[in-house]
Amino acid sequence: MSQPFWLFWFFENISVAGRWMMEIAGGWLVARLADSAAQVASLISIASIPVLVSMAWAGQVADRYDRRRTVLLMGPGLAVTAPRWAGMRLVCAPLVVGLAQVGLSYSTSPLGAAVMLAISSFGIATLAGLTLMFIQLTCPQDLQGRLLGLHNILFAVVPPAGIVMGMLTHYVELRVSMRFFGLLFAGVSTAWLLLARIGSADLTRAEGNGVV
Image: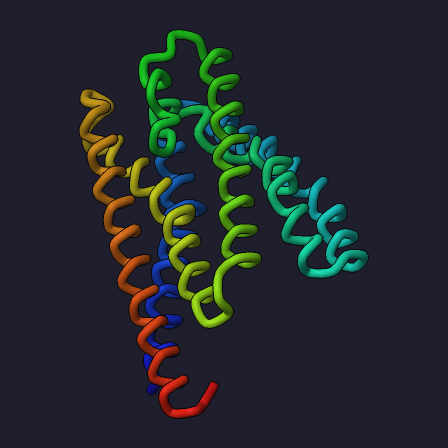
């Protein structure tokens, strides 16, 4: 089988694993941290409302506009669904991604934690949309699949990994979680550079053989 297939298979498996961790393992952790099943159900239901509302709008956008304009609208669209990030982490306030978790771990007020999480979630969703826009509008076609796969890894695997790390450390040491996130981010960056080099080498060989 070809190298692109194996790369696609590898990143798809990581993406699926990350999705499982987010939807199943993440919910299990919330259930462990909350004493009330009703509280868990309420959080999940409230977090789903922005997604349901934005789905109809997203369908209209996809039908009306071309790909470029759709990508440009993706950032604000993800920002609309950002409250879902806050809802999934409302019970476990210390478990926020990356630099956004600074100052949240020892929040004294649940309302304050919810507000700060909503703000950080808005930034995370907007960053995700802008990253997708940058990849699709500026990167060569042969590298877009690889970069989009790495983007999915960053935003699908890192958040639940931070949750698991926070659970293992019992929220005693925030810097441990920060270092763990830093190692993951460094790993993703290294893989990004490696795959970009592989893609460039493939393109160079194809040009030398007169394929492109």
